[in-house]
Image 1 (spheres, rainbow, N blue to C red):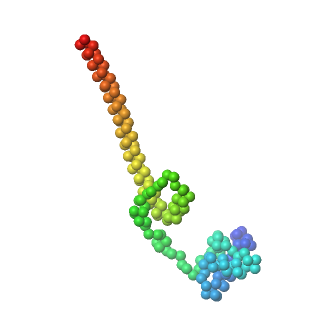
Image 2 (cartoon, rainbow, N blue to C red):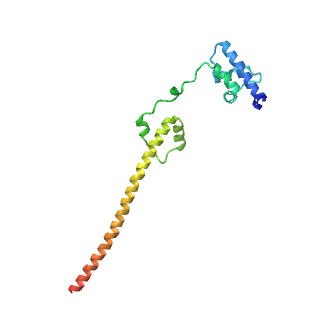
Image 3 (tube, rainbow, N blue to C red):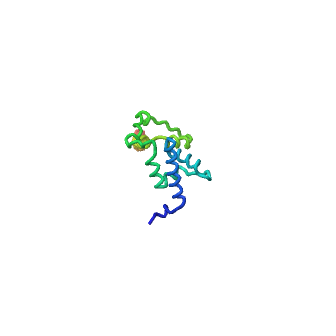
Length: 170
């Protein structure tokens, strides 16, 4: 029994239009890409609607027709990855507290995953280092406060002894 999706008239229409568009593009000796298929379906469709690229991607049969006939070949996984980012670029950080977050968001979204992960790992390490330094400083401040309190108590004792000594001498 056929899948419910395959029974859908829109599903069938997409498959037929992609198939027809691919044949016409082949006959004309033109590039076969999702964009060229969309353009061809718009030309061929009497209503002028055609189909969208997302319809090619989401329709399993249409995607198979496109993939089998496209004129460009997908790059291998090793070529798909961009080269490792420059170490200086990853490690140089200039964060301004009052920055436009939408611009920063777009900038970060333009980087590849490897760059983002390397930068995140570096920031985590930097944060841990800064936290450790801060804690040491806080510990030092705490010790200084204890020392001050201890010295103040000692100063009171010394003053008290001096006062008693002076009272005894008079």
